Image 1 (spheres, rainbow, N blue to C red):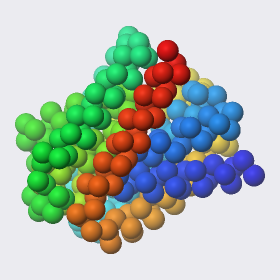
Image 2: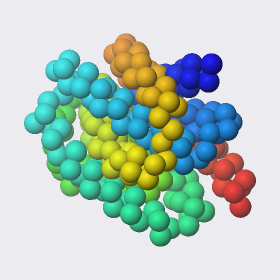
Image 3: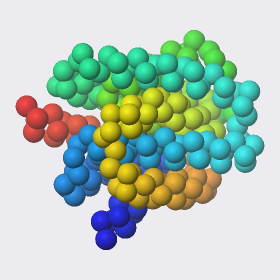
Image 4: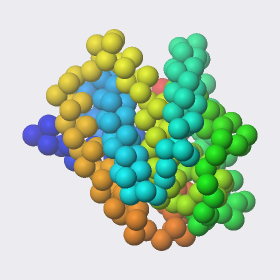
Length: 246
């Protein structure tokens, strides 16, 4: 029964994560309530997100909505930044990480009202100064802590005038890249409870594919509203955690 519940937690979380980021809003508290150790929760999440993100990227790539020529530079940029963030995280207090996350998400929320971009752009993605700096900054944050990383990436690609479906493909490749090193680290450290991780992965793979199909039919003008709702949820959750941990 526990594994069936985990399957559906992964499915719902990754469906939301594919559409707007913020899948951790569901997986983290739900798995902790089930009594699963925190490091095993984080490790299982990293593995499921890594697998499902790559399959989502492949789906969008095979639909020919993005190309490898546009995408290639995302992998080394996000992988290197995520690795550096993971190394730096060991030297930063947890309370400081919460503050960084809250400030970044509030900044993204406010910026969404200043920008007129609505995921209707048709620009080609290339390694511009803004793109590289933004991608590496978010990758560093993902390695440090990570809540809202996918949502922040979608805001970045919207600013770069990339259409919604293409933004999802690029976002999932970046998430795969920055999360890969972390997933390997948790495996090496022996923090993975494999039956739990596998159930979550299977649900996440299903949720990612459902999310892609919903995204194809979603009107881009509603995407920014969805992103704002996810950010509000993330900010509330992080503030609550920070207060409980203080």
